[in-house]
Amino acid sequence: MSSGEDSDPVLGEARRHHLNQVNGVLRRPGMYGRDETAERLLLEAMAAVDGSLTRWWAECDRLGERDASSGTGVMGAYSDILPADALREATASVYAEIAHRLGWLELDRALSAAEFQRLSTDIGGWVTQDRTLSEVIEAFGPPSLWIGGTNPFFPKTLAYVTANRDDKVICLHLWNAFADTAPDADLRGVHPEPVVLAVRHRPGPFRGAFSFTPEGLRRRPSADQCSPLRPVVWIFHGEHARHASGVFDTLDAGLAWADEHQVTGILAEYPHGGAYDVAVSEGRFTPSKAHHGTADHVASFSPGLRHIHLTGGRPDQ
Image (cartoon, rainbow, N blue to C red):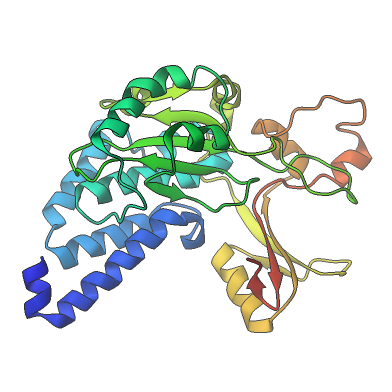
């Protein structure tokens, strides 16, 4: 493709643009929507620019052949593996693996062959115990690709791979959420930092590709919790305001509105239904005290999903 870029600067510019878009969605998928439509569209566009449509379509067919995609996509295949709020980042990791094979993934760090061999050999036994994000980095170093934000209260996926496009990608899926606290208390997570739930490291059929930590087995959804398309909205609550002042279908719509009006406050993700009931049903909160589930507790329960602090319409860094 480099010769094509040299002979056709317009095509070269288009390719660089699409590469940036692909690598953007694979790092912060939640900024591109609540399902994998963005990955599908952007990777197919990249394939068209790159002259690789046949290979892209073959990769999509292979997802179905190994049950890595259901009627609701890759997210549907993950819906009985991970809690609902961890699906978005995990789903992007499957498309990142395709992007790596097709030469589109820009790695933050390529593992050496020796590092990758050690990781491949050790990871199945390593996750027989509960593990934290800090332990992952200490044991295996920074990832090749960090999917999701750095907020310690949100899920994320860390992917490890070599520069060799034929090597598999090993993905560790980590989870955390906001703990239930009193309205005037500081925010804290269910865990002090994200914890590993599962690692995708085996080839072959999708459901057999995973090893789980004890916490991952506890958090694995039951049959009635497997809903990859849980309806959510984003609600803006201004600083010092008594009432919410905006409701949006997507994060992007809320951020665009906040930027337009330069507002200061919190843009938070809410599930449809009662926040307490949804958190209990998804395993993000387990009643353990006498006041849990009382009227006052339910009325003040935080949704415990993603939220963004905004100042003058811009997310705080």
